[in-house]
Image 1: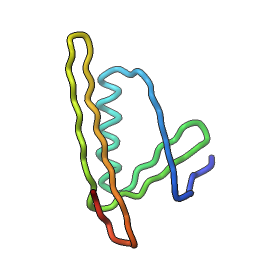
Image 2: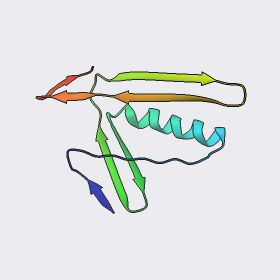
Image 3: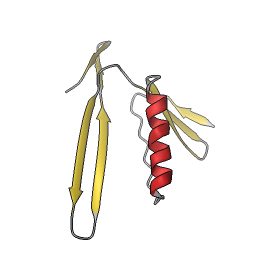
Image 4: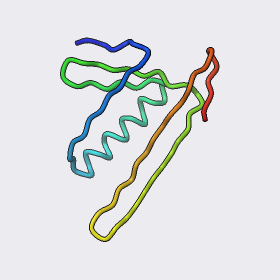
Length: 86
């Protein structure tokens, strides 16, 4: 397994799941983020992010006649050793 440690790291994954599987996944994310770190793994690649104490949370939701979506975005910046958000 290789771990990405470059300054710019990206991870993307998309998959249809049952609502129960999504709830379990979000519960897991909630638990690990309390440790200020989160990792994602796909096949043999592991990507780890250290999360500062101050983050920005953005939520978007829309409901249309035959579809809907909810998007959560958590972002942060770390400038010169100081945690900052937009």
